[in-house]
Length: 161
Image (cartoon, rainbow, N blue to C red; front, top):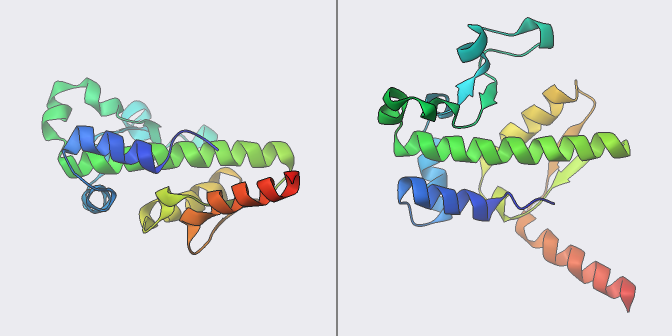
């Protein structure tokens, strides 16, 4: 696992947007555009970076546009929430893909409360796993995903007794 997840998303979203709940943070993110906050490949190269098959809309630096005063002024609460969501989702996907590649695993099951009612993150993880693995890895999601950490702990405890 990673320390990045639902708690990180909510904590950063509360700091940046003054929202109160996870659901409110997701609602803000659903109306935002992270491209107003993140530095994209096209911001650096002027378009797609074909040498590495990167679309110009690929995030090159999370919150990278926030180095410019005029961009800060133009970023809405919704944009900040979406950028926060995408930063965490991209990092979770990257860690998962690298771990799967190291272990020769082609399917990864994502669990945890971060994914509860979070269709933006699920779609992004599925797309990223497919793209970055060149179609060799698939992201899978479970119903009641928030309980799987507790189930894993219980199963591990049962093994040791």
